[in-house]
Amino acid sequence: MLKSQVLEGYIIKLDEAGATSDEIKVIYDEFVSAKQDEARSFAAAPRPEPIKEVAPPTEGADIMQAPIHQELANTLQKLIDESISKASQREASWQTPVEPTQEEQVTASMPTAEPESTFDINEDLLTWFEELEGVGKHKDIAGNPTNPYGVLNTLGLKKEEEEDDRAFANRLAIAYRNKMESIVPEIKEAPIPVQQAAMSMMWNTGNLFSGQKKDIKKGNYMGFASNLLDVVTVSDGEDLPKDEKGEPTERWVVGGLLNRRAKEYNKVAAEAGAEPIVSYEVKDNGDNTVTLIYTTKSGARLMGGIVKGKDKKLVIKGKKQNDVN
Image (cartoon, rainbow, N blue to C red):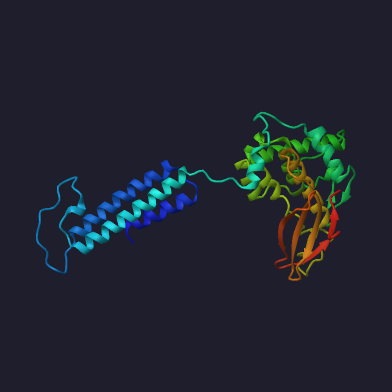
């Protein structure tokens, strides 16, 4: 493969990856230089048919003016013209504004928090967790022991002897927020409801998923909210059936998690002026997959995605259809 072909492929990959024009121009200049070197090599190569000997082109002369075989000259010129045309089209596309998606248009209307802003974890977030999780020790649907305010993973922190449940949950929430900001620093610039929904996801699952992080980094907050809606399964827990090796044989789709994700979505939607979700449905497709469907106030249906059981039996826990409460 010619060097120019390798470079051209690299340019296309850079373009697809969203590289800047300055980054691509460095490679494109090398591509043009390689193309010219290859043209000179073709011109200097021995020919099966005798051609009239001529003096080599002077420095800076247009190589295509050399009296080489006409068919070869035409082929080379076509290759160079096509490459330059493609590069020009790509350059033009960099300057062409891309139409924002509907989610990005809604997000654009949302007021953003100042970079230094924070929300009051103790008063705002934990009060919400009281509603979602309760304030007493309990087991979650999969049988996992859960601390007050829904704490599963304490990140290595231990409750002090004189510390009450809310104070410990507040200290843990600060640790989770620090973890979240280290994962996606752009969260500090997001509107408060986006920060709260992201913290709720961190609190519930211990992490943010790749699509969610990407949307936060891009400032596509309604896209982030939509990416919450398919995180509704439990694959481990004391109450899940196990095989002889102690591995769970089922994957549960939990109605209560659909309800929670809808509430997280609605926090972001309220800030954006978008419609809230009022109900959800889990549709069994009969092939060890289910489709998640959320319905907004006007009756519009939002597809939460398709959940697959894969190597486990998919089981629906809780109501298959219910109002968000």
